[in-house]
Length: 220
Image 1 (tube, rainbow, N blue to C red):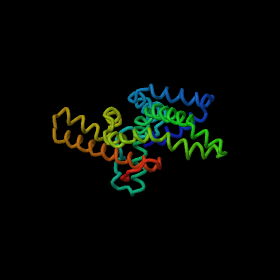
Image 2: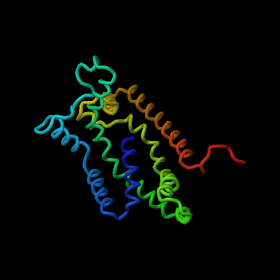
Image 3: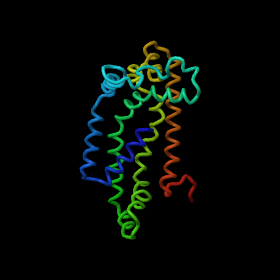
Image 4: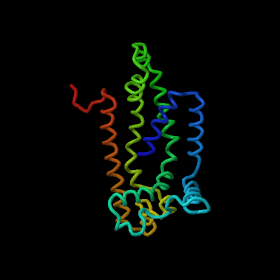
């Protein structure tokens, strides 16, 4: 979800500011991040921010501090967010370049359509043309990818979970495969399949919310 919340505004900004210096700098940074392996970045973050030779800012293992069972709900939530900051960064940055470029290309294609020129000719403000007319149509390809969010979230990352010693479902599935624990493998596959169906349903509902021309009502 963080990848989408960050990449969609970046894609919109890149489409509106096409060719500007700021857009080129953002594109360079995103593709530089896209080329960095997640396990390498995880080791760098641990070295610089996890108590190595530099700053001891974030914990580098587990999802809760020792004795967290005695914390209040707020303290436990903050402690959990503090522990998962580095793993979330490692799992998020790689999708930013791909999704933002996808949003940028989709929005640029819509901005060249005839109905956008008609809306501008009618004297509508640029913000209305961009967010009410262009962006709603440009979000349809992005919504299609949303269907893969839920199974991707539950799938986790075996490498990142191993580096940060997180008992996640990705590591659980990997260990189940090695030990030939078929019930656990079947359970994880069933959960992933169910979440895929839920993701597709959510995407279909979002289609209707974004584009009023799409309807699920029966037509004669």
